[in-house]
Amino acid sequence: MHLLLIEDDLDLGKALQQALHAEGFTSTWVRRVTDCPEWTPDSPFKCVLLDLTLPDGDGIDLIRKWRQQKLVTPIVVITARSALETRLEALNQGADDFVIKPFATAELVARIQAVCRRSSQQAGSIWTFGDLEIEPRVHKAYIAGVPLDLSPREFRILLELAREPGSVVSKSSLANRLEPLGTPLDFTAIEVHVSNLRKKIGSARVKTVRGVGYMIAI
Image 1: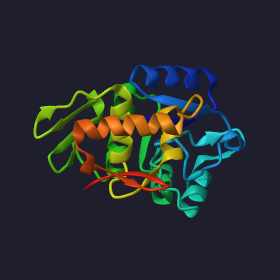
Image 2: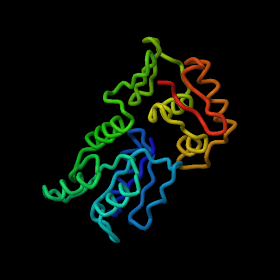
Image 3: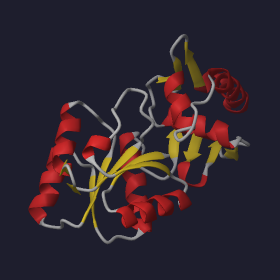
């Protein structure tokens, strides 16, 4: 899962990025509001970690702006500002969760996973689509209880489609999500991986929307 980390403290930002990487996350780290990347339908970020006190702006204003722009990506506030009125304002403006510094990495990871489950309409640690079950935390998937032998890339494609049930995920979006820190994956490679995935889980479970991308059957 690729995250956008907005944190101005140099030491904390480095430490947090390393800790998240150890937990299986990739991230883009910026230290100012003006350094935030432009959001597009193909943006690879699945969650935002946002400090409120930034050198060139206030995080709550950024939350308000994004929600007014209809951005639905989950936002987890990470801040030392613990006053009740600050927490209420951040949540009322559209933050999905609020974590007060200092915090344990395990708690932050659990909160990231929780808001992403809610965002993808999956309430538990196991995502269910008929007899297809996915466990994102341990990178496992099953059909009728039988474990699937998926390559890392096949599992990532399945997971990205499962995050948006009932919606089409474009090839360009998949390309960026699968290689968020490098050159986007070639479309031909995506087609090969999707073909292999279909052979293992059944072609009916992954639908092709010609000229656009793919969607998981629900």
